Length: 474
Image 1 (cartoon, rainbow, N blue to C red):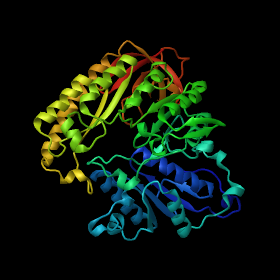
Image 2: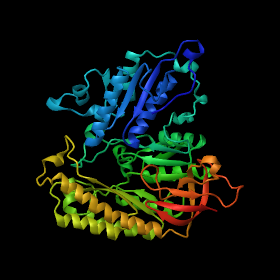
Image 3: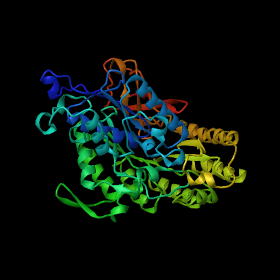
Image 4: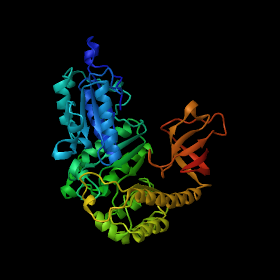
């Protein structure tokens, strides 16, 4: 959600600017769609706010991947209709069909004004224009500089100023049997490398100190365009992940900023990134969605990587960059998963020593091919396996965290009330926002030592607490 404090020309002329209530649900990729829509609304003079009541209309950007997300999205649409009555729906749920092949959102909430799928800013703006005409010519009187959330050429961002998500592609070419994202977001479409780097530069110039690179399949960047040569700052550059990361590292260096990679499939060319990590040019952190370890389960999932090779791959990565941190997600209770296959997954977690592991109990998402596979496990068994997985994963993570006691780490401060005199919270290179742990910073020893959100500090790790580290500022 976003609140735009800038003044439009309508306000300057004495007319109240039209207001749009906005709520963004789901993953960081959906968040970047929301940021684009909000940027364009603001450029056209609309005011945006976090509340439904009192707005001229409401936009709900939905998630439609798993059942809990579908329920949350439908409930939010219902709340917006009840409080406001004029609602435009966009996002992944907007692409889902219900019984009989009709649009699911319209079946449940027939009074919505319009429904679009994800990554559909043009369609959303068209719907807004139909129901709430734009107040002015954006080329005449755009005044973005007064808005706290505006980041120059990068537009509006919904994250804190010191970090931002940088989406490099949309869609996915894989057809994993548990996933319906390609049916909602389409096949892979890589952004032009110059566009990505221009956005990154604008973010860094506006104060961003951590860029989180995201997509559905970050490793596949450029595959759809055969790694064609693009241009940036008048120089040729291939549309390929390694070259992109090298350029991002050069951009980030003068600011001391972090580059963090998410959704990295373990393809062989990922090895090319390890020297950049070992040299400290991008963070030694990889978010790799392994999903399982047993080759038969991966075959039923139609995953693009072989389970037998992943331990070897992890060993190579750690040899090339000993400080690397790996986070991953897994599915427990996939259709047909035997006890032996599940035990193989647990053994993989122990041997691989995954730093940060999350796990979902398999959820039969409507439209997923996996629902037709034989051997669907009862829900209580799927939940029990998830609990067993998390017990093993948390034991591994706890041991790895305790190995860091005594080390001194760089910390990006996220929160520091009272200038940090009572301590604060931040993150090390091993901690992505929202999904990993934090570094809890103790009050500085010296009264003159202060902390500020968005700045870096150094801390000596003195203890752990659950998923978090305890650090003393040095």
